[in-house]
Length: 508
Image 1 (cartoon, rainbow, N blue to C red):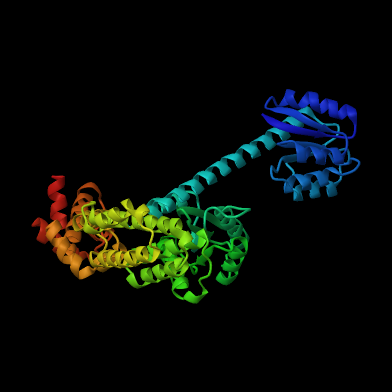
Image 2: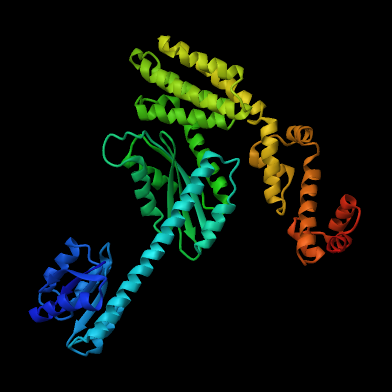
């Protein structure tokens, strides 16, 4: 049901509109009437109006002024203007204001019906477009959340398809990280702070904010092709963020040109965050607030995930300086250590594929007894040794269980065999040592990386030979082998016949 505002300074016309509008358009009801322009503007502010039918010449405010106000309102109702004066100037202004219809008095019922139908059709079209846009936005946000939770397993093919289906093409890609205690003293939440910053500095972009854990947010600004996007000065962005929340820390990536560059943008922003901590002089550490503690917690975890024991120990040193000689901070110290150890246990378990690990056992033992410790320096000394050992263990083991990661790599190859991929690319993607993994991969899978990739490509080519009429050169290229002669040689070595013979035998 569409709510209509009928505005005219002549009472008989208002009554006629109240009676006639629902007759000619049953989906409409007159929700408000106005005898002058001021009353019409008030009704626009106070009522949820979908369609305005207004005389142009009225006291207090003209119909054109009402149309202008409607266009600026949040609801943006459709406007049908009525005039007793067949003047081109009015019609031209009505067109400029995107008025749906311009009717002359005396109003014809059929013309009124057509105007209302046109207004309703435009409303339905806009609602459908808005609904589709919201679905795409929700899909993109979900994909970004998935990526941040499992970056090593995530590919952007689904995201690219969703973006393409929405008719979008991004050519400006930014990512940022924002750290802040979730319980700000007053005012906006951290997500609201980020939203406001992004709305101000990335108004032309699609914007997304993802909460990672407790106090870590990752945000994205994606600019569509053809829209002018100028990234802000990161220093200005940091200053505005800290003005809204002095305890926060914000870093922004540079501009990237493709959706597939999102991981690089996130990595750059996180790297800048770590650099900001590393460059901070310990003498400047005077803030012992909970927000500061949580910020240091995050920097330690980032360093451990990056297999950087030195940076992790720098974070422990910041904790040591904060808690030195402050016996009243037992609870805060226990909280931060318990939180950090719990996260590191999860990292080790993910790397090992199980919880049967000496470092996991040591971490659990400490957490179980943590309420019995009252010597803060001793707790931090123990933790400093533990965090170094964990970081070194993850680095040594390349943060993966060979069987688990080999399966992931094989699955990745099955999906991306047509692309120009190499062992170096794969190892870089999964953050593993190429020479070490090459040997372990062969032990686990039974063949080396190149042989498996070739086998996958030839199997795919064999299916294409039997099920399509594409040329051998086209099939060769489609499975990732650009040299057709080399492809034929590989195929013969594997199948004992050339591709054409294989196709003919299959057809026979």
